[in-house]
Every structure is written in C-alpha cells, then in structure tokens.
Length: 486
Ligand code: NAP
Ligand code: G3P
Image (cartoon, rainbow, N blue to C red; front, top):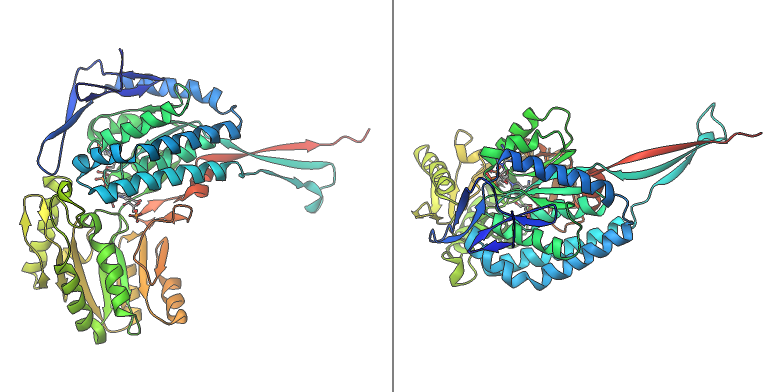
C-alpha cells in the first residue's frame, strides 16, 4: 500500500520507488535512550515483503548499471547537497533516537555529505585498462585484454546504531556509484535517522528500485535477508558476534565486514604525555565510547604510568556528563539497558579482581560515568572485552615488546595507537601490531574517509574507505581481443 514517508509518526519503507507500510500491520516503537519517549514507529516487515524488496532491487539494477557513471555521480552530488541542507533536521532525530549530542550528530551528517561527494569524484576516475598479450612469454601482439570494472548486482547494506547515517551512506554511495542497487537494513535503534537518509537519496533522483529499505529487528528478519538468493553482496558493520553469525550462514556470498574492536593505545617512555592524554580522552570517551575505533585499553610503560594516570584522572573529571538535549556532552546515556548492564558487569568484575578504580565506576540509569581503572591485570574481563561504553583499563608494562604481545593477544585487530617522539620506535611497533591501522601519535579513528579502513582477526573482513569500498562492491571483467591477421 503506497503511502508517504511518514504518517502520524509511523515511518514507511522505500520499496521500488514507493513509501509502503507493512501488510503485517506490526510496527516497532523506537524509544529514546534518554527518556524512553517514543521517537516514532517503524515497520516490522514480513519475509514476503522482503522478497518483494529484493525483486525490485534486482530488476532495477539491470537498468542502473547502464546509466553512464557521470549521470550516477550527478545524482550523488545532488544527494550530498540535500543531506547537507538537512543536517539540522536529521540531527534533531538522532539526538533523541541514539542519544548523540547535536554537535556530533550534525558533524556526522555533514561528514556524510562530504563522503558522498568524494565518492562521486572517485568513481568517475575508476578506470579499467588494457594489457598487451605480448608481455607474457609465448604470447604475441595479437592478444589484448581490455579490463573493465562492473557492479556486483544487489548490495545488502546493514548498518550499526552508532552512526546510522554515516555508516549507511558509506555503503550506499559507493555501491550506487559503481552501478549496484542497494537494499538498506538500518539498525532498529537508528532506523528513523537512516530512513531520512534514504528519503534524500530518493529525492535526489536515485531511480525506483535502485535504493530500497527494510526495517525490522535483525534478530527476526536478519537471517532471511542475508541468505536471500537475490543478494549478491553483503556490506555489514556491527558487532563481531552478529558478523560471525552472518558469515557462518552465508556460504559463498561475498562479504565486507567491519566489526568490533579493542583498540590499544601504547604509550612509550618518550611520548608527549599531554598530547597522549588529549588523544586518549577524546578517543576513549566521545559519544560515551560507543565507537568501534574507541581507545579501549592503555598499555603504558611503568616508568611514566603514574604521571599518565594523574593527568587522565584530571581530564576525565572535566568531561561533560548528561542529557544530550541540554547541550554538547561527552558522556550520554548508552543505547539501551542491556548495553549499560554489560558495561556495569565489566566494571564490577574489574573491582572484584582488584583493579584500582581511579575515577568513576558509578551509574545513573543508562549513564555510566567515565571510568578509569589502573593496574588492570590480564585475568580481568575489561582487559579483553569490548565495552562499547566509557570505561578504560590501564595495563602497566615493563617494555615495548610486552606491550606489543598483549596488544596482539586480543581476538580483535581493528586499530592501535602508538605515542612516541622517535619515528624508529613508531615503525618498530607499527610493524609488529596485528591490526588494520596503526595511528602514530593520534587517537584511533576511521577518518578521513578516503583512507583504507579495515579490521583483521575478529574485527572484520575486507576494506572500506571510498575507493576501496567501490572496488569491494564491484569486480573486473576482461574482454580479450584476438586479432586475426588475414
Ligand atoms: P549489532 O547488534 O551487531 O547490529 C548491527 C546491525 O546488524 C543492525 O542493523 C542489526 O539490526 C543487524 N542485525 C542484527 N542481527 C542480525 C542478523 N541475524 N542478520 C542480519 N543483520 C542483523 O551492532 P550494533 O549494536 O548496532 O553496533 C555496535 C557494534 O558494532 C559494536 O560491536 C561495534 O564495535 C560494532 N561497530 C563496528 C564498526 C566498524 O566500523 N568496525 C562501526 C560501528 C560499530 P537490529 O538493530 O535490528 O538488531
Ligand atoms: O564506530 C564507528 C566507526 O566507524 C568509528 O568511526 O570516525 O568515530 O573513528 P570514527
């Protein structure tokens, strides 16, 4: 049944160019983590409706792939403009939907517009090439391979709650740019913000069926979506647990996954301590630490640990804690009670096993106060588990090799930071760390978005980053010319 984008706070899905409500009549209330107010309702779609979405995407892609890349890029430029113009409006939703403060929400939306523009610029320069046969022994001048890049077909994009706009667009834009169609399954908590994004792609001129959305709990329709026969590629960002589950049930389906992390900041004796503190505070506690690339453990040389702990304690005591509707906050309510309970469990475990609580450790509802533990030992859960919350363990080490060994002993391998004034030390550490990215004298972070962004081990599969995402969601086709000399 065709409707408008939203009717009485009930948001519909974009299917084959129409905003449709679900035949199930079932909706999901999206309640704010701040105060449980109802932000809106989204459809809980049926598997039959999921079939319709993928059929529309499949059909539309055969047309979309033939649209000239400069025309596809023009639509992306238009989408970026509309998204940038809607930054404040979308941010107002995000503040209540995911408890992200206004400054961070507006920043996420504007970063998304930049991402899309850069994607449009990049795709116009994605070239193929030609390879002469004669360069290989035994071959000759009569063979030439013309190499093109082609779309994969239907991309299933699945995004997480903490960046519902940016981490949806970071899949949608590169996929569309290279000629795929997209089905977006946004996070339920964040789905309204993501639906706004889809609406703007639609209004920018993305043709019917080329972009579609599916809302509904991942635990209910997720498996059906990821195993759907019409899905040609899955681009997933989320927890390691869900990512590994998807990988297990989707044999042979190509995947791009950005998963959990336990990013370590390694502080060497010659580090600029003040610079390290500034980066650690921002990296560990912004948006309550709900970032995959958050700094999630400190490995510090014993000789400088006391100074570091003292400076961190002071900076943490000045963090802004509270309701993001009342101003820009560092520490906001976590996304739900389950998340807050999990973080509290890590705190209690650390206390029970003898970690020194330097500051924090307390909770008010879904707000966990910024917490720093010193003298954390390797038997404690906080040394290894991803909190996705504002709790930071300090592990004191004797030397750089001990730090590297502990860093590498994690199941995760997203990013790490190393703080040192000596470039040789930096490269020594970077060379040995089993991660996707090593930040030298900076917090762990994804941006800028044209850099390669990847996780190894339990942190992911494949590489994001604008050019890398375009290449991941496309493939080569070789056309070999065999010249006949009559
Ligand atoms: P999540 O619980 O794994 O959910 C991620 C997405 O997967 C959501 O859209 C979710 O839908 C969906 N989903 C859940 N079960 C599914 C299934 N069986 N099949 C298909 N989709 C399913 O993660 P989150 O809580 O949103 O985000 C936090 C986690 O993501 C953290 O571990 C964080 O480290 C990771 N993360 C990683 C990156 C990165 O770039 N590496 C970035 C951000 C977050 P529902 O919302 O409906 O459950
Ligand atoms: O968790 C989201 C991940 O992509 C981190 O992004 O830019 O905050 O490092 P960023």
